[in-house]
Image (cartoon, rainbow, N blue to C red; front, side, top):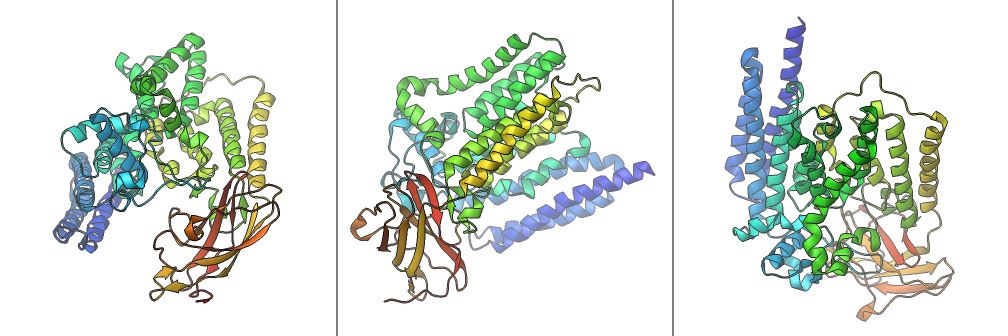
Length: 555
């Protein structure tokens, strides 16, 4: 009876994989206008899914393991034949970062340092390369490479081989398929369905292959998490012990997001070394050296080539304030639920939350040893920029960590000084909450739309008249955007002839602002709002969310 229940449960879970394949085939058929081939591919994928569903419930139990392998192959094939043509027919990137990475690889092949080149809309042909740019609080936008060198070095071979069309997306697709194969390979038999489900039934595949630049570091993070404690326990082959920290170094050399995991890995190595009576300092330094030397080896040529340019690019997210954006805590101001935000307080709150999580990791190590990576997105949920990719990037590696890390022995010695450990968690945690609350208090500006409208049968927003009041005792230069149901900011509005907008302390001005190029008007009763950014003081002020009713006509 127990064996039968296990078989039924296993088949039920694998049914969801085949159902995901069916759904993807149906959706692909509906997208035939993007590529005529979907009219053929869509029904074929759907047929494959239906056939697999039947086989899933009819194949004898002794042969079901082979069908699971076939299901994984079908999942990889589905992603490849759906996403591949989508990349091939796309005309431009969805993000500036993806365009920057490809351009950087091209420049490097011509012997030019990518970190020293200004990647302006003119040089990248804005309308044909990228349709989303990263804006700064000072009214500008990011116009240079802003990631470590690994972000574009892995693209160089593809460019050299002649892959010039949306190279970043192709590289990310290959990396993501490789990550799926790796997860399937290392998972126990009873969780192997995780790999095809992550490939088919989540947001990850779409984000990773449509301008997102994070897929490239995902396989390396997974290898870093794979039996990471072998470095101390030495229970696996010798090569696996150094492969973990090396892969972590590679991941950190591709993008800054993996940097947040490094403290947890190092603290974990310290705790494991203490428990297994290994030299704590020497073991920790050896692990850290593998990570740092790998990171340095990938970036060192560019550090020597132009140190200041490399530092400016690599540390840009920390050194140059970017406009608040994302699906994290910052969403309550981006959607007009509160009127103001001081981003620097959120960044500090995020740091304190990281400290609290590290203290919790030490205190509750037996529980968190295999699950801490699922909690890292909490740290990235708090800052003023918490894009959706930051919140889901670690999921594949977190599964690897949870499924392959050795359990903590039952006789694990508890850490001493329980009250101190509790304070180490509570104090930074409470301070983080307090700073997050303060961050949303006291808007620097009060913005009131006075007159607005649309033209071309409500297709485009016309120039808008707004009243802006400076609530601070400082002279400010606000930079204004109008948000209309967009996932990202779409450009700053400006006065006639691009005259600067400046307000003295407590001054109120009524100004006419013009949209960037042509900006689509909201649909009837769709919500919209006005945002104003200032770099000194560093703040964001917004209006309430309004319903669009074709505007207050003044033309």
